[in-house]
Image 1 (cartoon, rainbow, N blue to C red):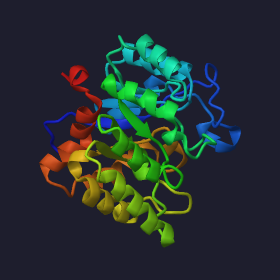
Image 2: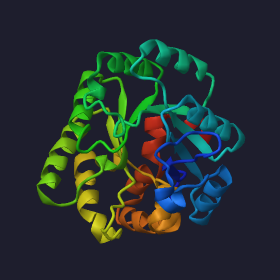
Image 3: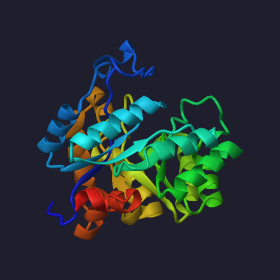
Length: 285
């Protein structure tokens, strides 16, 4: 594929087990129970001809965000950072946003809602107040693994805060089959009906399900129908992919689907949407 728009992987992670807690990264995860560095990430990008990436928080901690921002300061291929602030404490959130206000790569905020015990987290008045601050700073808000607990609430959030750019990571984690599929689709459609939303075609590997272009096609075509290419972006979700096809295998499957689109549509998915949603122009110019 030949594109004028630079390729941007909109969803990569790094973590250092010696410096952070990353309590969910346990020995039971096998190859994932390791430190993943900027140098390793760059090698994966280079092998697939991807020039840039957005780093996404992997832990609800200030340290994780500091680590990503420091990485961005030393590696120009990092064009954006989606970090974490304490959304349920607006005062703390404001202080943390002030602390990072001078970092040109901070482009969004995320909270691991799927690990939070509060089903109504996105509707908490304190969280809404903090997200108004996020919107006022021109930052996006990523929602991970939203199905089934948080996808309906994501639509409600986007409606209540129209100035907030809301990004659904991993298409909300579609269930791919059974009655849950229809419910997921309805919930995702409600999110897509809000004009300030976008979604990532990323993190779609499921245990026991082949990760192929045809296997992903139902979710892919649903996403295209609901959001259109202008509001979709691709992401590798590396290093989560070390448990399956790895970076190259994931890129091969996703690029096959993207390759079916027109050049302009490919440009949106492979970089243009991420650039617009996260405001990456300064780092890409």
